[in-house]
Image (tube, rainbow, N blue to C red):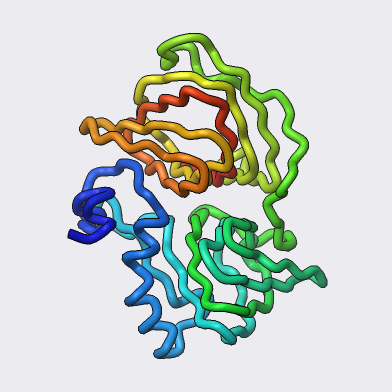
Amino acid sequence: MSLLEKTLPNALDRDRAPSFVDLRAFAAVAEPSLRNGAREGGDFISNRLALPVAGKDGPASALFLSAGSGGDATMPHDEFIIVLKGRLSLTGFGAGYDLDADDAAVIPHGTSFTWRANDDVLAVSLRYGQSKAGGRPITRISHDPALEPSAKPAADVLLGPAPECRNFNDYRVDDGKFVCGTWDSTAYQRKGFHYGHHEIMLINQGSVTLTDQDGRTQKFAEGSLVLVEAGSQTAWDSREHVTKVFAIYRL
């Protein structure tokens, strides 16, 4: 049984129900076929494997770029990208960024940029399918953002005291339909509710246990990268302070 099958049974079944996915495990399983694609000339836009859900390709993908490769590209949609290993260099609008492991950025729709894989690069992305070209620059997700108090979870889903939450948005468009940044919270528990959005979360501090509508449970600690899919009902249980980098795509 593969690592991905242990983490999420039938994750590559196109008809599986929405749930949560360990994206590091997904990327590790996707990497061998993506390496083959890179040898056959796959580039930044094409050499991807989308994670399927509910009968179609979902907005999350794994991406592989071989060391020393590079080129020019134009992004056909807004995309959040987070590097899992290697170093990816991006240059656009006169600014350059080197993304190492666990660094993230947003490449906006219509942005023309150059890229280079300084080492073999494995990354995960979240595509915002409703985006429009807007002439915005590449935006790096802050390492030390100025967090400000933000909304608490709705009272009707809480299973205990309301937490204290803070937030910083590096990138936000369409009244928050696509928003990326950093969030933190004190410990809290909430029951599952119907997710109307896809969310990638990189846990930078603390840990959280997620439980889906079928009772599948997994704990995600510091360094974990997880996707909660739209259409799932996922409960949250954190017993300590949690900080996460996030990307949200609201349908």
